[in-house]
Length: 194
Image (cartoon, rainbow, N blue to C red; front, side, top):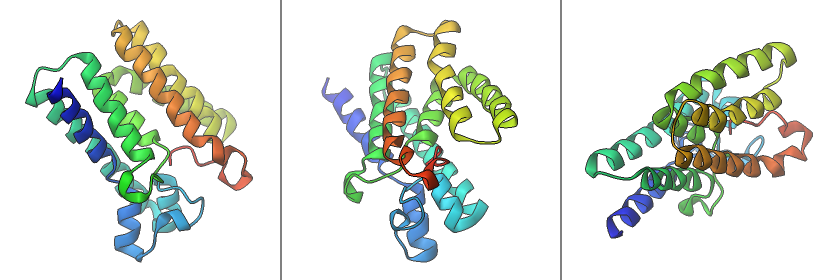
């Protein structure tokens, strides 16, 4: 029990490493949360740091997920529930990082990286749905949200446990909840991916 709690706290700490925030501080000497959409996420980083800033943010945020989950899975024999709680820790740390006064990114990259680590096939389905949605609508927000909804469904259909299916659904709800403040601002409607 104590070991599991330590792993969850460690995962939260990894989640608090925010690629967009630290890249913008390093490259521009500015807080990304004071620029553009105000989100410490990949899309806002891309607006102010260019394509390299976007890609670097995605890599940093995905790498922290893989590193944390790899540590969790190799340090000890953990149950699916503990692995999932560590994934929640990563997401919560990214969205509400303690060292950034609980103002981080929106969690899309972290959610997708967790899915890639736990249920790789779900990312393939998500990518296909996203691609088709973008071709039809030429927008990211609605196709992005719809494509992410396929993750818990694909997880269940492909025979993974209910633990992962329900857990990924709950994580998705948190990510969508994190986007609610932006949905009221026209200029931020394309901020999925923050």
